[in-house]
Structure formats: C-alpha cells, structure tokens
Amino acid sequence: MGFLTPFFMIKDKLYSQLICIVIYVFSFWLAYILLPQKLHDINLWLLILVWHIYATLIIYIFSFILKNSSLYDPFWSVAPVPIVLFISTTINSLEIKLLILIPICFWALRLTRNWLISWQGFSHEDFRYVDLKNTNKINAEINNFFGIHLIPTLIVNFGLFPLFYFADSQIVPNIYLYLASLFTFFAVILETIADEQMRTFRNNPENKGKTMRFKLWKYSRHPNYLGEVLFWYGIYFMGLSTGLLPIWTILCPTAMLALFIFISCPMMDKRSLKNRPDYQEYMDKTSQLLILPPKS
Image (cartoon, rainbow, N blue to C red; front, side, top):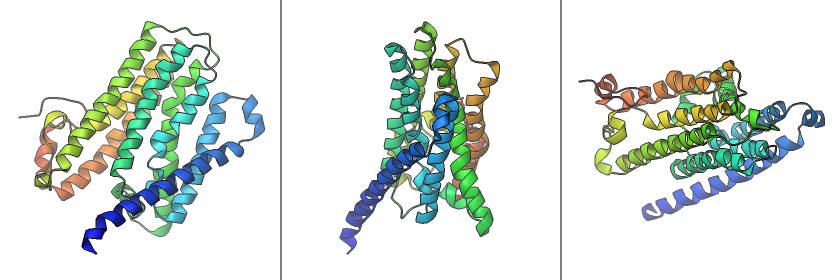
C-alpha cells in the first residue's frame, strides 16, 4: 500500500477542495439571500459588511461541523472579490474599475492559488488554529469564532473600506490612482516572489530543519507578509486618490499592519524557534517585516 499513499493524499486533497468550493458557493449565496431588504436602500458599506459577517458565520458553522478551521483560510482572499465586483457596479468609469479590479483580482488569484498548492485537505489543520484552540472547550470555541473567523473578517472589511468612496462618485481617473494601482500590483509581486523563494527552499530535502536566509529572506523574516501589508496600504492609497477620504481612514491599513506585527509574525517566529535550532540567531540579526540589511 506504500506506493498508493500519494494517490490517496491527492484524492483526499481534491475531495476536500471540491467540498470547500461547494461550501463557499452555498455560503455566499445564503448570506446574500439572508440580507434584509431594507439594507439595499440604506448604505452600500453596511450592506456589504452584513453580507461579509453572514458569510463568515456560515463558514464558521461548517468549520465547526467539520472540526477544521482551515476551511476559513481561503475566505481571506476569496470574499473580497465579490465585494469589490459589487462596488465596481456603482462606478461609471471603466478605467477606474480596471485600475481597482486588476491588482485586487491578481492578489486574490495568487493567494488562493497559494492556498490550493499548500493545503493538504481536511486531514490537516493549520498549526496557528490548533495553537489558538489549545485550551479548554469553551475558550477554544471562543478563540475559534472570534480569533480565527470574525475578527479577521472585520479587519479585511475595514481594509476594503477606502474603496467605498469610489461608489456613486463623479471621480475621474488621475495620476494618483494610477500610481496607487501600480503600488498595489507590485506589493503582490513582492509577496509572490517571497512565497516562491520559500517554496523552492522547502522543496529541497537538504534544507529540512534549516532556516531560509537567502534572497529576500536574508533581509526580512517575513517578506511575504510585508507584501501583504503593502497591498492593503495600496488599497488605502487608491481611496486616497479620490480626495474624499477622512484622516481617520489611515487606520484601515494600519489595523492590518498591527495584525501582522503583533499576531501573525510572532506566531510564525514562535513556531520556527521551536523547530529550528538556528532560528534565534537569524531572528536576532534579521528585521521582522521591513527589508533591511541584517545586523552584523
């Protein structure tokens, strides 16, 4: 049976992905059906926020049933697509639509592809989720609902908020929007390069148990996360190009920055310290997020 193991792993992965797709289509549809009719006439952002939360609740229910919170993983990159497409229906200029949609859809496709490649199926659950739920049953479920599902959804929705200033506006394309769109696109390129460098490193059996110290990873412990954070600042810059954003909206991408600095990066560092003897030295010399020369 040994030689058949890869086949069963692939079968399990494809089966899990198919289930995941069905659940997501159903969840997005049901969330839309459940929207109160009066919201359609009140506020576009409130309408989308309620849909986003409803969809999260439905995904959470399926995660609970399947006993695997990794079901939520692609929600981060998949849910923004229908949201941005819906916002684009309120924008008259095709040029503005494309400047917004192209980098965001590129980001969504890349991140979802990354998940499809790395996810092993429902037989596996992300270690971060396992760690968050490693407590008594009640606290574990509180962490599961709020920490894994609801709070990330709210942060993503908040990050998308600057785009709502394009809705039903008379804004025309300008150089600032072009620059913001390019910035957002190149942030995704940075994230892609960093992920591919790490994937190549990990796929080499000789590197098992070793720390990646080359290329972008020589200058930042989490260059992929840097690209992700810059992507959200790119969305903010897009909104800024309208000239309509209040000062407080700088909090939209900054909330995302805080998530990575205080939660995502420390969790990854903690795991690496546990599994790699040389990681402490690397951590002492290498910037957490920004690309900076290593300390001597």
